[in-house]
Image (cartoon, rainbow over all chains, first blue to last red; front, side):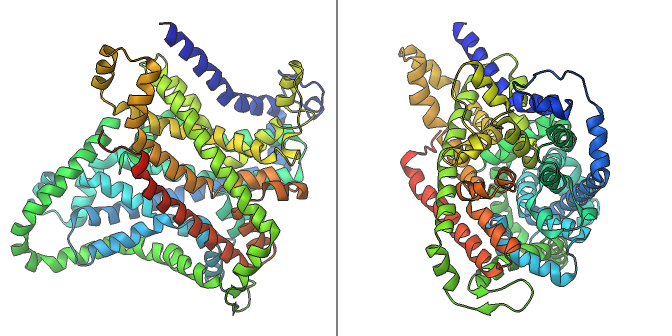
Amino acid sequence: MKMKLGNHILLIVGAFIMIVPFLWMVLTSLKSFTETMQVPPTIWPNELKFENYLNVFQSVDFLKYYVNTILLTLGRTLAQLFLCSLAAYAFARLEFPGKNIIFILVLSVLMVPMQVILIPNYGILTQLGWIDTFYALIVPGMFSAFGVFLLRQFFMGIPKEIDEAAKIDGCSFFGIYWRVILPNATPALIALGIFTILSSWNDFLWPLIMTSSEDMRVLSVGIATFQGQYSTDYPLLMAGAVMSTIPMLIMFILLQKYLVAGIALQGARK
Amino acid sequence: MLHTFMEGEVNLNSAIVSKKSKSKARVKNKKKKFSREAMWAYLFIAPTFLGLAVFYMFPAVASFVLSFTRWDGMTAPVFVGLENVITLFQDSSFIRAIINTVIFTAISVPLSAGIATCIAVMLNQKIKGMVFYRTLYFLPVVTMPVAVGMVWKWLYNTDYGLINYVLGIFNLPQPSWLFDPNIALISVIVVYVWMTVGNNVILILAGLQGVSKSYYEAAQIDGASKLRQFFSITLPLITPTLFFVFITGMISSLQVFDLIFIMIGDSTALLEPLRTVVYAVYEYGFEYSQMGMASAQAFILFLAILAITIIQFVFQKKWVHYDG
């Protein structure tokens, strides 16, 4: 009993440390600029300045950043869910020559760090004339070795009897994939969807390098350049940071059981 | 939820077994069906495989080749042999970047794993509000790293920051954090640990839930203390999970860019104490247009990651127990 109370105290202190930066971000976003330059700092804003949020939209084309980020995230995620699951189905269920070699080649991509492929990709995208377009932001992110691997592992766990039965009923390979495998794999598809949404939304290095005009800016690059322009105007910067992070925080809180299971699954494979 | 996934793992093994026994029976009708099935398989794999080949496999090879060239990104690359590598290892700022990267990883990964283990052990004791705590600890993991960097820069602010304000109340020294070259890197490490601890808590929690209760019952009968139980039962049995946490943690901490980029901002004074190898790749490739040099740096990083991963796998026999 005593021990549990001690645990709670330690966990609350820890949770407090985790949450303080978020609280400080929100509180600062509601203060006036002069108030943030006071010594000692105030904890609660003297006057709640909600107009800071509107000012963000007036200072930069924040709406555009938002739309761009949503398009990038949707494009990559929908494409990955479809393409990865299609390939994963072939690896999990179909027989064809060269299967193992192709699978090993796909897995080898997992080992290559992002920075290594960055420079040649800049060259490739320049050749294609894709620099500073949505093609550069979305197309290379549509393919994922991780996604193929994760879904294949899950598909192999779906009992084979179900697709054998569908085969006897005259279902095509695509029909089995579409009507048997996908409906039975929703937890894995949701988990991959969340991983892809998170990494696309928060992606920074790739859009930073592959785009240059303000029209193509995504939120992460947008608030980073914003910081360059208004380096000390913390209420404005924090309002931008709050608006950039809130969609992911809400998604996490709503779908956390899928995310947690997905992460645990990664640790479980040996 | 977790259960469905775990069942998937188990079924996977039985699927492999049944596949072997069925494969003989399959051979017979394979011949006439084979080409159609294979054709569909190639069709399903082709988009992903081609995409990975163009944007991942080919660039990985190209990066290796470009390491031996001088290239500005516009005109044709010129072959220069090992010149880039030799120049890099004589460049004191690159050496410093390597040292910074090593310090960053060597402190942040064990620290994050250690704190996460303590939290996970506490959460694993059928504690009330487990999901509530887990949610709070995980929030930083889903937060945009650029935003995290901005908030912490503000928290660390020497004059107006919250941290120094709190320290001032208790009459403690108020360092300049990011602007003190001696502790700038440590300050960023603290942020990185804050960002990653939640992910490790979830991994370790999953590992802990796989430890059978019977071990603890036996230990209790023998009169072993809680602390003793932790070191002789819990810790050895979660070593496979800890191994995974260390491997993936090292691979990602060696590649941190967003956080470093925001922390450095436009302050040239912070370049020396905070520059990591990845930041140097960005500088050379996209600020100085020395893409050959940047490729060499990226490839050195790649080889280092590969070497560390292999070494970890070799040494795992010494501390990882797979019999649980």
